[in-house]
Amino acid sequence: MIRELFIFVAAFAAFASAVAAYLLAVHGQSSLKEVLSTAFAAVVGLYVGRYLERKLING
Image (tube, rainbow, N blue to C red; front, side):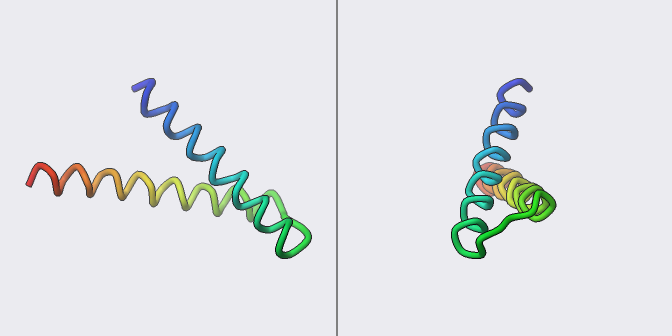
């Protein structure tokens, strides 16, 4: 449980910082709403991928 929470927080922080850096470098500005929504969507995709991976391994 704690491990999953740590993975969620670490992934969210990593995606949020990457999105913010990209938006700032390419567009010159970044809004909090865009950064948080994109990071949340990326974390959801990460968890869907982990779920599918575990299902495919087990058959």
